[in-house]
Image 1 (cartoon, rainbow, N blue to C red):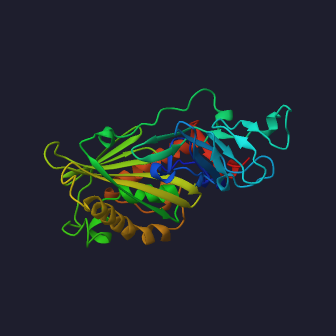
Image 2: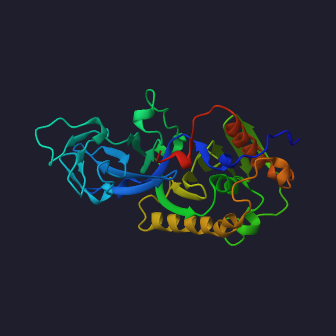
Image 3: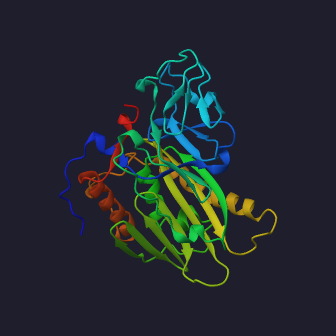
Length: 331
């Protein structure tokens, strides 16, 4: 039964997101030169230090606001292209050429962010180190993604839609035979019974010979029911770039035909094609984020996983979980 005792929606509900690890790009993107990425309304600059370790800073120099991604890496430091102020991975300004022999003031430092690399992706925790008490929580991934028996083929996309609408699209099994009638839903029946379990932060859906697993707020995995022989998996993670802009990073995995030339490109292309079939529909949905009150849209039994997701999102909005607000990102 749907609980209709939800509090009234607030404007800021659509501007807050869980404060957790989000993917912002692929590890292979960051080589010798810094690059810029956007996350939750903030611009970040990514670069590698002298040991090759990835670092993430606020993208604009505290001196005159120049874009630090226009600078260069020198001796493990990020050097601004305007006045050559240099910063380490913790955001400390360690050199000001026009200020020789004098102490560097604390206001010359900039914000730095926790960053790590796993499964070929760059992950950033969107709370500046200067504001954190201790270390951020660990990044939990589905174990199969780090199973070396699988080859992972990457793909990605950016949709003009709120994170909640994008997540709902991958929990919606009923749309598969309709929207994906030329690809993954080609031989699927429209007459389906949804078999799913929801517990705390996870939703698990049985869909024929596969399971769909969702881990709140940003991980989703398709995996086969069978645990032996040839297996195909598909993983996606969701990143809020702006309030209504969401990046999707995917990995299509297989434990077969691993050395066949061109096979990974084929899996990447096919996964991108399936993703593209959903894009225009999800981008068309109004209101843009999911309605906060479940009674605002019609539901049937097949919508069970989406209803459970909405309940979990509402729980996030109304409790004390770590969060970050887009409009506060550059404060």
